[in-house]
Length: 148
Image (tube, rainbow, N blue to C red; front, side, top):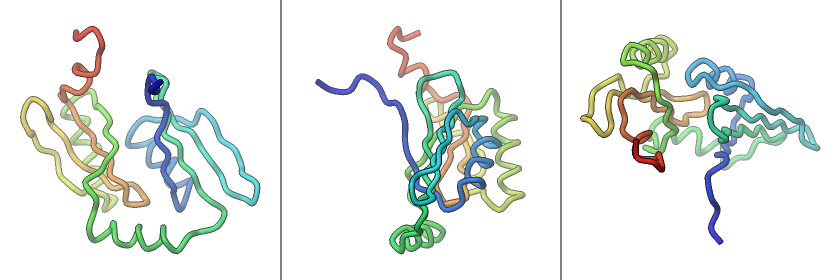
């Protein structure tokens, strides 16, 4: 039997505290669970508290060579994969992108891409993962079971 719904996505991060701070500021997520692993690694779950879905950030105790290479490559050739968060307004998208520009994180400035994609910008997190901030995307409406 297939799974009924997504519960989380997990990302391996280099600096857990920097990543938690980033997702608090840019995606309004808060820590709902934190633990230390045997050997010194740490794991944090972040949520917006509105849906039963968490972003899991994992900081292993030992850095891997593979992850270091992937992070370096992502700086020069970013992968189009991303996490997306909805903003309350275009002004909020612009404010987050301005903050990202000031911090050297802005990957794509805000722009309107039609009624399906809406108004969005792309921001790099501390590990080079992409966060899309948007307003007016149809994804929320399309995902609702009742279609309203």
